[in-house]
Amino acid sequence: MVPPKKNFKWSYLIEASKCKNCATCWLECRDDAIYVEDNANYAIDQDKCQRCARCYNACPVEAIQRVPFEAAS
Image 1 (cartoon, rainbow, N blue to C red):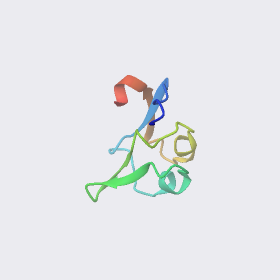
Image 2 (image 1 turned 90 degrees about the vertical axis):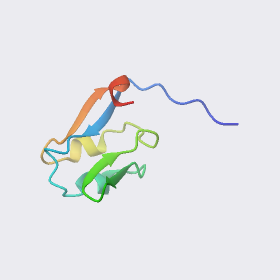
Image 3 (image 1 turned 180 degrees about the vertical axis):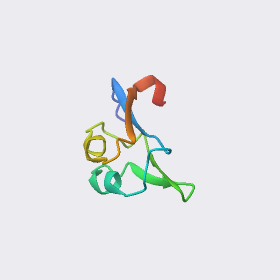
């Protein structure tokens, strides 16, 4: 049996234009939710992300944005 998906109020997205590819978010993520997309940009897997905000708080250039959950889907 598959557990029901959690209902989150917000999600996190990485704004590629601000990201400096420093990998700080990737190192902070305990859920293995951050990955390199198209061999160029970091992205967040919304299915794996638990919305702990570790990446958001760690980003030195504020490239990670908190958005309403529906906007990230």
